[in-house]
Image (cartoon, rainbow, N blue to C red):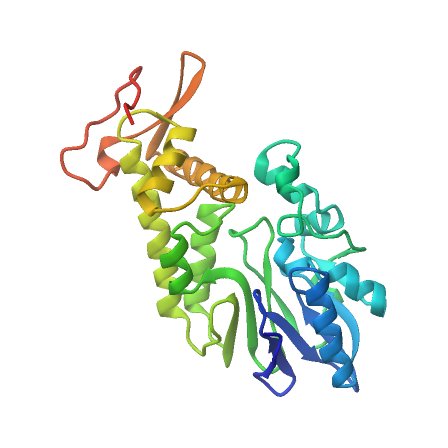
Length: 312
């Protein structure tokens, strides 16, 4: 772990739980794409930089999830480097308590206020095209999180952040975290059309072609959407739906999984309601969801049953 791999004339990645990009600039100057998941990751990255005689000038964060910005504060304190993050990700990186607050939907209880969901705050500037090194370009990749971005380097290496997961990860966890389902699907279609010398996803192996993996991620999204529609064939509350999904996928509930999967399921519900596949009803002061018969790919499924609850 934390080995350095060269993938282009000036482009590298550091093997870590969420891969960190490294680009050599001029002389001994380098920049990073993301910084790892915590202070210890930052220490390991700095040790690697020092061993190569490199000076860190900037960190370009793809998005504000804690496993991508956790090393920011330590590296900035040690090197004085500038840090940039795109759009709303900039605010979340400046004020990391926003992430567990957003996920929980209110002030997060102490079980959610830890480094895996809440990094240390760092001094961050907004990431725009004009602050990038020469030859490096920004790629908008929304969906997984608000304004997530990737990068293409001068030697045609593309860093894709969290816009797709490995087959192994998807098959193990089934429901990958998503903020905006529609935007995520559009991002994956963009990835299918991309070409590069090599792609570096944060949570999958580097490859020269990711079309098949991108399609597998798309299929998983549609599979999850259909699973939700099937479970909503009679009106069902969010909490009951979430429990049924955990049971059917063999997942274990804890506070982290409750907010991560729960937030994602809410995003699916919004997506399915916006596309006319799902209806929401307030019945006896409870919000219930049920799918429209024509959108559930299963024989013999009942249509909307307004006023009736699922017995699940």
